[in-house]
Length: 296
Ligand code: HSE
Image (cartoon, rainbow, N blue to C red; front, side):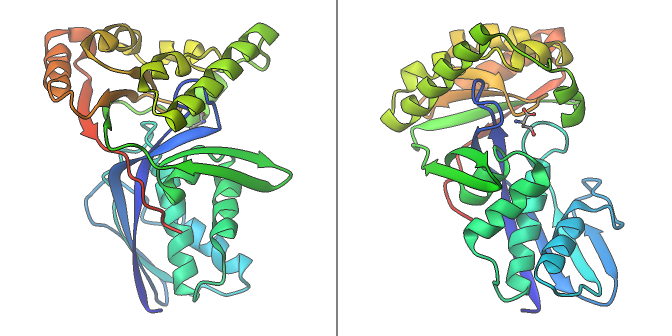
């Protein structure tokens, strides 16, 4: 195939308690056009600052797929629109990886299965909680075991919506992971197992009244919250405005609130809160829906 156009969604990993395992896809999309050519040409169509050289993540990913399939890649024309903000905990890297793999697979005539593409993506990213929902859509629970990736997807009810509180500063995942302890207590592990199990069951049973409980976490949020000025305040104040759950999106610094779609006043209330409080002015509130369609 000569030219392919791929859209890949944003994603929010962890959902509080499901560190490195749960995630969901959101209605914000990077678009990538790919065409084989005799050299590398990257066009940053929306001036989002993606690298224009060989360090470009879409290019790196496409190159790896070609290698895996035993095909040479003389050059590539990549045109990217990347509204998913980078280093904000909304899965921008995973969107690039997903788009690169799905796009390369189409250029090559679809030699890889959906499962192979998923496992390839997880091997690049190192953990599945962003790439699995980016590729499969919906709410996804994933486990990596013995080189395989096991996923269960559930479509997210249209009665649920999300408000992302996106700060004006980046937080690299490497820094947010470096803040985590090497070991946790048995008590904290039990705390998280019980909450993550509750979150998964609440999603499947439509028990959004239990999301607040399922989102509670002791494995990463207590260590990362200090890296995100104003985050503690959002955790405290947004439930009183109708948020069903509030948690750090992925490694942060975005905070994600889950709301009922019928709560039409939430966004305006949140924007007023951000305007009024100097400690919160660096956040921008963006209302999003779930994205339930699969790319593979
Ligand atoms: N589960 C990952 C983390 C998501 O929290 O570090 C970000 O890649």
